[in-house]
Amino acid sequence: MSFSQLLSILIARKWIAIWVFFVTVLVAAIVSFLLPKTYIATASLVINSKGADPVTGFMLPATLMPGYMATQVDIIQSRNVALKVVSILGIANNPTAKLQFENATNGEGDINYWYADQFLQGLQVNPSRASSVIEVGYQGADPKFAAALANAFAEAYVLTNLQMKTEPAKQAAIWFDQQIKGLRQNVEQSQTKLSAYQNDHDIAFSDADR
Image (cartoon, rainbow, N blue to C red; front, side, top):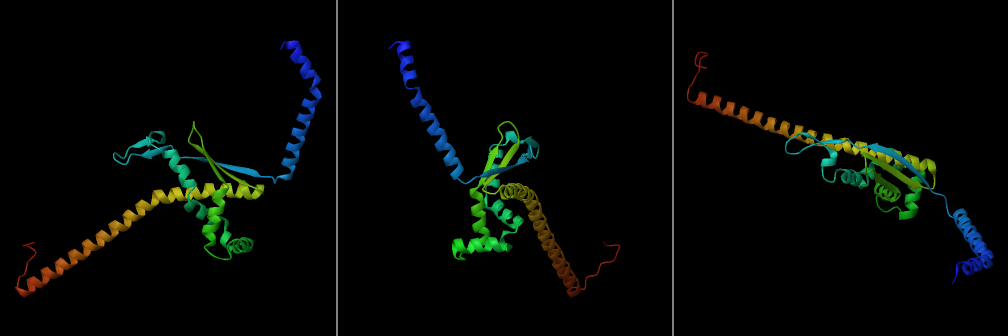
């Protein structure tokens, strides 16, 4: 088939091509009109770029720590963070939220966990490949609600990250306090036994002997 013959065929069927194109655009427009609108709100998080080596204690770039950014993404997508989002938004005390929960579950289960799982479904977390920035997005039918969820997830992540850094220090302080109390009790018991032994054996020490 020569080029002129191919061109003649295309010209002869141009109206068919135009009609197919018009129908495709019309169907796409109708489907887009009928489908509910969705909005995506995003919040940017700058991840701490340094971390401590667990052996030497020296600060190392996060890029040298295996899976660091992936770990942060997992934290953001965790139920623990989602539960903080529920708390930040005060969902458990919202009458409308309570009614929706009861209608969906017949009042069975925990409203906090139920909404935490629901919120995680619309969450989108995209780490940057070239920087330490993570985009936290939320998709929803209401733009204001989507923005509130995106910001709440970012705030909940920051709170969780702070807890992860401060909780070990708190636990260590509690442990050291318990150890000190135990040592103090041992010293007091030893002093009591020493005093009893001295009294039983009529042993006395002067200041010069000490």
